[in-house]
Image 1: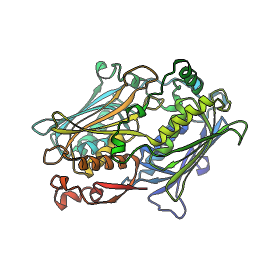
Image 2 (image 1 turned 60 degrees about the vertical axis):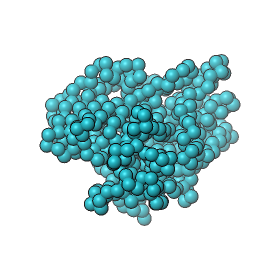
Image 3 (image 1 turned 135 degrees about the horizontal axis):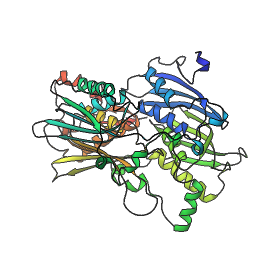
Image 4 (image 1 turned 90 degrees about the horizontal axis):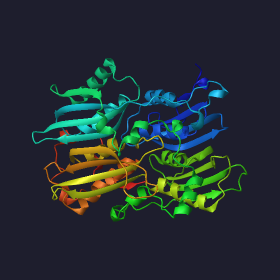
Length: 482
C-alpha cells in the first residue's frame, strides 16, 4: 500500500531528531470524538504535540500532528502506528459513517482479574504497568499490598484491548510477560474472569460501559447543561472542587489560561482561542472537554511557540450545527476549557496511619467513554522510583464525589509510600520535593537539578551501581522548567 493511501502514516521530520520527533498523519472517515481518541493515544505513548492541524467536512477527516517524545520515554513508533490504525474508522460507504447517533453497538468488554504473587523489589509496580501496556491490556482498577515478609500481592482488574481473553494462548502470553518482568522463578500469575461483586458496585459500574470516545454518547449537551444550571442554580462539580491549598503551598496553583470565543471570524463556526503553557496531554484534555459537552470540532490548529506557550484555535459548533451565541453557554465553555488546560490532575499529600507513612493521592477525570487518564500510575511510579521512595500499598479505582449536582465519577490513584529506611516523609521540604517530581512526571516537564533537601539525604543514599539502573536518578527533587 502506498503511503498516500494509508490510514495512518508516521514520517520523519526534516531537520529534527530522528529518534525523538515524528509527523503523524491520519486520513479516515470522520467520527465525533475521534480527535479525543487520537490525542489520548498519543498521550498514552508519552508524546507531546508540538504542532497540529485537524480538519473535517463532516464525512472525512485529516489529522496531522508533529509529536516529540518526553524526557526518558522510549520510542515505539511501529506500535503507535498499529494502535492508531485500530481506533480509526474504516471507509465502508456513505451510509456507514461513524457518528455517535448512528454508531454500531460493539459488545461490552468483559473485565478480568490478573493476580501476581512475588517478592518485593524496587520498581516492580512501574515495570508491571509498562509490560501490561505493551501487552495492550488496560488496567481500570488495582490493589497492591506488601506483607511483612516482603511478599507482594498485585491484583489488577483489566480489559483486553485485543479481545482475546479468556483464550488460553492469550493468558499464557500475558502471564509469560509478567513473569519475565518480575524476574523471580517462584512468581505466580493467573488470569480469571473478574468476580461480579469486585467491579460492579456503584463506584465502578460505569466502567462496564467503557468504550472509545467516538463510540460514546455525551452525557449532556452544552445547551442542556447551561439550561439546567440556570433553573437549579447548581455549581459545576469537577476536579476544581477537589483542589485544596496544597498546589498553592507547593507553588503549583492554577496556571493562567487565556480563552476567548469569537463568532465574527466565520458565520458557521465559533472560534475558541486558547493560550497557555504547554505540557504533556494538553490537546487531549481540550478535545476531551469539548467532546464531554457535545461540541463538534470542524477545524483545529495547535502550535507550541519557542517560549513553551501553546496556542490553539478550534472552530466548533453546537450539536445542532449552530454557533455558540448564548452568553451563559460561552461562559460555561470558557470555564471548562480553562480548568481542563490548567488542572489535568489533582495531587494531594498527607501523613496517615498515625503518621507512620505518607499517602499520595492523584485524582483525574474520566473521558466520555468512561476511561481513565492514560499513564497516571506509570508516570507516578516513575517519579517515585527516581526519588528512591518505596510503595508498599497502592490502589486505583473509580470514585463518585458525594453531594448533589452534576458530579461525575473520577479516577483515584492512591499510594502509601515511605523512604528506604521505612520512615515517612518527615518534613514539608520532602513532601514538596515529591509533589514537584510527581507533577513534573505527569505533565512531561523538563527539570533543572537542585540540591537534595537535607532531611531526605539519609533516605536517598544508595550505591552508584544501584543508582545507574535509573536514567532519571540524577534529576531527583528538582524544580521544573518550561
